[in-house]
Image (cartoon, rainbow, N blue to C red; front, top):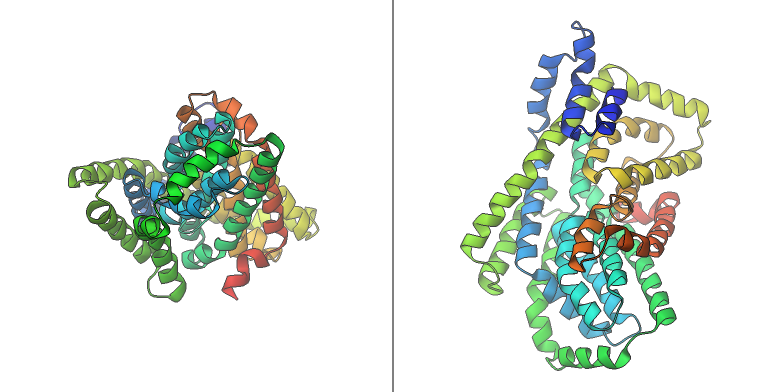
Amino acid sequence: MFVILLVGLALGIPIVVSLGLATIFPGVLNPNFVGNISFVVRNMVNAIDSTPILAIPLFILSGDIMTKGKISDKLFDFFAYFIGNKTAGMPITAIITCLFYGAISGSGVATTAAVGGIAIPFLVSLGYDPVYCAALVATAGSLGVIIPPSIPFVTYGVVTGVSVGHLFIAGIFPGILIGLSLMVYAYIYAKKKGENKELILSKYNLLKGKGFARVFKESFWAILSPVIILGGIYSGVFTPTEAAVVSVFYSLLVCLFIYKTLTLNDAMGILSNTVKSYTPIVILLSLAIVFGRVLALLQAPAALRDFVITYFAGNKLVFLLVLNIIFFILGMFMDVGPVIAILAPMLLPVAVALGVNPIHLGIIMTCNLAIGMVTPPFGVDLFVAAPLIKEDVMKVGIKAIPFIISFIVALLMITYIPQISLILLR
């Protein structure tokens, strides 16, 4: 099945078609096999008959509303007010804005587009290298899939049965750690390359002139959004799916009636775009779940578990290192969602057999694939950030390499210190 899938991808066949062909192949080869075409069709419908899966389109919709409603502008001004006059203050403000915006959108692409649209031109106007600014925001934008609420966490929870709420909580500290690692490099870069302090201070003083009360008032509703979503989940007031519903209504109310950055006509257009975005995702997700079920019927997960235990001699540390390398490479060529949907059900029994917590595995997979979003040649965040400065994607990708190295250092800490992810669940 994996051979069919890989050959299809290598030939340029769309991943949905390749996955569908791979899923029905055992049934076509052996009509008496339980996982025949009828089984595949029935289970595709059953696979998406799930409450947690509703969180995915709802968080996509919420993120689109926030992006079109220019919520990122408010967040950027708020954080710049406090640290904009410090060394690397403005680049670090962009990273912090990505962290907070990720807690609203759940998407790396949405975070890169929303924050990049405001932060990159502003940073360039302060004298920073445009390619550096694009690389910074593209890398920090990938935090959108790690900081909860995260759409890949929902995908992982749906295909493995792991609690989505627990995944959200476990993603908080890893996201913050990665953000801090990116800030460290931004500070080093500013120290090494220098900054136009006069220009920065002149722009900062304009913001400071508004006064804290006005800046806080303008940004209050934007800052409150992740507090409501994460606070509600963490306190048990609502489930992740219910949090997604709250997020949609909250973002609509804020953008329509408080900030007035959207109209009802805009909202209908956003809803239409969300449906178009989600349709291929739900088909892919349902196929991926059935693909995992057919593999289970073939005893593939058990065979993989036995192979790893035999040839890795039960060495969890080596297994995790190999896992990181594999997902790092896959992340360069494939999107986060499909990789998690296809491979998570296969790898979960192996990881559990080696003593890896299922929630920790989800964090490791997502963090790895988040790096892939900004890794050349096909990092999707690069394709979002590069056009904002009208530069070549590879040029931005090369400039992002030091940020990627910082990301990897944080990833290794997350991989080998499980408490970073699991401490809030104890």
